[in-house]
Length: 443
View (cartoon, rainbow, N blue to C red):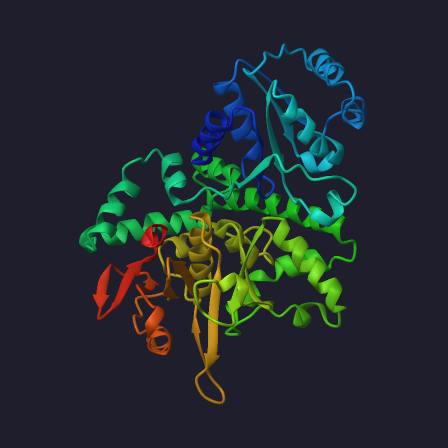
């Protein structure tokens, strides 16, 4: 049974519907299988008197061709109602364009449909490559864009039937209190989230079977869909190779993703195009090197120096063991119980990147020379007002933070709060707040 999971973006859609009253359409972007279609159809069913749901992956040529001539909008509406056997009601109905990138003319038509004001319009899109899918059309300015990410930790706990944990964790964070005896259990709960991840299909498999091997199989199916999509975008296979190498690149001590080490000699413009495809796919998160840490880091980021994370840490774990046909339950059990001997720093760094992104943060990091052979690195830099919040991530209880201290000394005038995220309980170490990883969501 496929469950309907509660998602936070539902409230954002409700806000759009009530405040805009048809003045704009809304486009929900996100990776494949992240739950866009399910969310939108649930919203359309609950919040409107009637709706037409057009899936452009499956829509007939007859439906697609309706958007090639917008001179007679009444005709389009009559045809759609007839084809889908739905009666639309003015200002009480919505038309959903699912996977709208597969019908660029429908995307372009949004401008005129919104102007007509009879109905609301919701679009969804994945792997939207601006260059490939919109090069011959006019993009509608009457379109708001939002991103649906994999389920965050609170949504995951909701799926587990637990509405209490995250609000309680918030109280501990706000009061800067350690969890004490509850900490070990909360870490185990959080490692479960890291292993299963936030893809609705994987969460559903876990709830149905409680079997990590079957969860892993589901995640492999999702990854295979991504690889097939990458193959369509780039027949040389380079795009899928870059995606599959994310865990091994992060596990190295290098402070950047090294595409040339993976692909060999490749034209710089082609590489830039491949990276744009990877970023647009929403399957990844890019963290850019800030050349000048300050409030406007987007202005000084180095576009050729970056780290790449998986948008879902559950998929990241499966990618890390991709060479095995199915990752055995024993590996998952050891990871769950924190008994696997491998250094898991890169897994924790990935989940922190995921949590920071899902709360609306752009990702930046900073490195600078320590001596001739070593560098300092601050894993994440958050901009807050006119100040910076630097973050260092550790995979264990190891709580030294030399890079963080050096950075805060170097940029003392613009530092507000500073954090070390690790696996032990909350505590203070001078001016640094040491946070268990499950509290990252509140920073």
